[in-house]
Image (cartoon, rainbow, N blue to C red):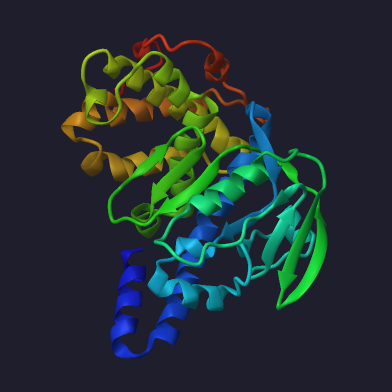
Length: 334
């Protein structure tokens, strides 16, 4: 995905900005749509496992402010964003698609939410988009939403009948590093994974981070005063981080199966990623050994059964304090 920034830079120096920008903008749209499609599938299929829901619409949104000032005018023109919120993409077979909303439409309001006008100046920021998504997430999860939008300068009104979805925002981080994280409200994975791994293994990665949110790990770790970052691999932090990693591994198996993915994709991901990427000294201290994690995941797969949605026992732990007993969850690799 660094190639996107390079494409913009080359275009600016060659005088062929329009064609190059169009190609790069469409690459951005395609990448955002992939992570949104996986996230939507996981979030709607597992709604019954979540205690915090939002209306699942199937919309991929963007704002002019996401783009650097030097690219903003081009982006507005390319995506027809003559309004506060642009529809970057509409997921197939989603409530938004059924209502007739299309990519490159502009949204003015949704239910009781009226979107603030775009800020013309200032550096690139996603804060406006985060606020818009939060406002939409606060609407009833299963009640019709009246959308006021615009297409090619013509205003319209559409009624969308959402489906309940787990409340989590899925984002792609444009980075050449291997980064995946969650914070209770958001799941983020770097573009490097999307370059090198097939979609089912990307879904496995996202399901793991999504599981952290469903299990309220961030809040539960903060409640007991754990240290994050480099300090996660030292002292009392270690046993709690290992506990949450194993809980997320186990729940991710159910999340994938409930969404119709083959949970064996988790095993395939670790067989590729583990040998060369999961052996750093700090990571190895805060996370169980990757081969043991695979053995634990394989047991969770064997325990799945045929009932869907599957609700593993670990789900019941989310309302309890962490106890740090990670070894009770672990299956040792043979």
